[in-house]
Length: 169
Image 1 (cartoon, rainbow, N blue to C red):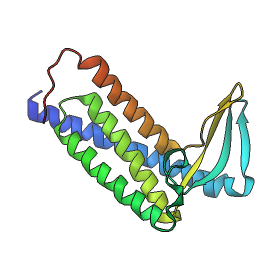
Image 2 (image 1 turned 45 degrees about the vertical axis):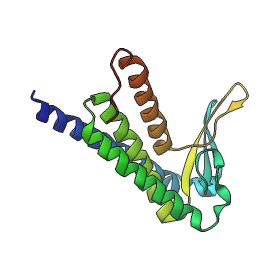
Image 3 (image 1 turned 90 degrees about the vertical axis):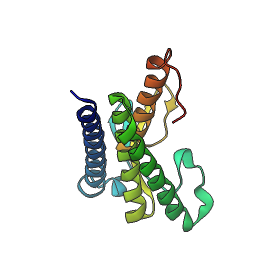
Image 4 (image 1 turned 90 degrees about the horizontal axis):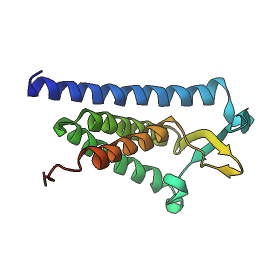
C-alpha cells in the first residue's frame, strides 16, 4: 500500500471509530433515558459489581469545575470541540494506525458528551461499577472511549516509540 493510501486508510479507520463510539454512546443514552427510564428508577442493580445509576454530570471529570453556573456547559463544549479539532488534525498526520484509532475514540467520546451538554445542560452518566467495597465514579460509553483512547495512545507512546528519536513536529 502506498504512503498516501495508507494515510487515507488510517484516517478512515479513525473516523469509523469516532462514528462507532458516537453512535454507541448516543444509543445507550437514548435507551437509558427513554426505554429503560433510569431517571424515574434512580439506580438499578444489574450485577453484583454493576448498577445503572442516573447521574446528571454538570461538571467535568470527577465533578471538577462544577461551580461555573450557567456558563459551565458552554465553556466545556467550546473546550471539548477545540480538543476534537486538534485530535482530528493529529489523526490526519499520524503515521500510526493505533494512534488514529485512539484519537477517533477520544474524539467520538468528546463529541458524545458535547451533544449531551447542548441537549440537556449536563452529561448523562449511568454506569456504576463497584467491587469489594470500592466504587468507581458513574460514567458512560463516551467516558469509557476517552479513557480507552488515552490508554491506547499511552501504550503506543511507551511501548512502540522507545528507540525512535522524537520529532518536534
